[in-house]
Length: 209
Length: 285
Image (cartoon, rainbow over all chains, first blue to last red):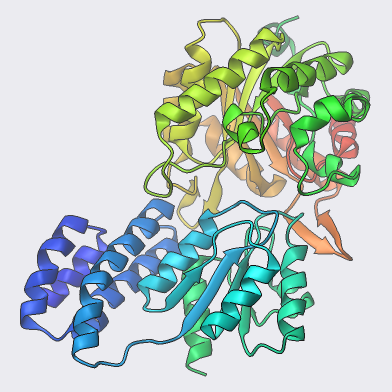
């Protein structure tokens, strides 16, 4: 088996030690973008698929994203040196005000970072102003709003209205336990994802439109 | 009469949801539900009474989020007072009172940074306050991580007090069966909870009564302990600006009665109301 294939398999197996061991050897032998595209990215995508299939669960998805992130930290400077264009899509993400739930949002944030997006994670209990300020400051193309409570879902609507009023050119995605497509349509969000894997897929598809 | 004496004679019906009713009574999202035990005492007693009037055998204290870890985050220090008020309010309506312990909302590694020791300490204190205030039973519920549930059961048992402990996990229905979000199967959960000292095990939340019936059937083959199930009345949806749960009292009660073929105790979770409990009681007769 090729080294990159081994790396991909180690990623799929959430085998952090093997990834750490294989990555420097891959760097000696292959271009950084090949290591990512043929190895790590394919691996994390398979991890996501296994999560959706119910073979993997939150801990595996989280660990997979963490391994991906730490590997990307090593590969990013090499990519920069070799002038290879990287994904420069930026995403602002946070849980709406009044809602302290973090985990779903953090997973989406981790999976997006693992997929090469630049993510500005504003944490939980985030006021509308902070979202607006960050969008303006970074000129991000996407905004992801999480709400876990039926009592805080309406916060998503308020922020969407604010963003539209400000005339910001940004696609807005919503998610969270009580959120569904019908709610996303009602509050005129651009998209809804049921889980972190779908969120990445949705943004991928919107970027490629 | 103790819970075990009751169980020998009959199946037991718990109450329904608390949180969704507090919201309908005007609780704001920034309010702490447990603080209503003191500030809105009469309302809390009335909710308990409504469930007893509807036919519930016993009620749960309004202490789901009453772990010192959670309450101190909201700047509250009078935790013993909050919990003893909750027990007082439940006792006003019900002869047997179940002390409710929910998850801290924090995550153990790799999702979060909390440790099992920290969970143990906070649950031990919550359980001590509940027991000092006179609850007859402890219910540890809505646990999505078996490790947190075990920390809670261990914490109650560490007090060396003979009190019935019920522990219910929250499962998702996946292609390969029922799992917690962390990937634990019901058989593993029931076995480890029993080892830690739980007397009654089962599931609550997330699953509606249709899926819970399926889980109840499977669960009966997985443990010899008495079983407890509290299903949601569907999934929360926003309709005309209001939270709505799809399962009607009739539909819900029919499923819960079927669950009683496999379970010893049933009750309502999110979206259930006294109307749901009343319907179940009618059909139990």
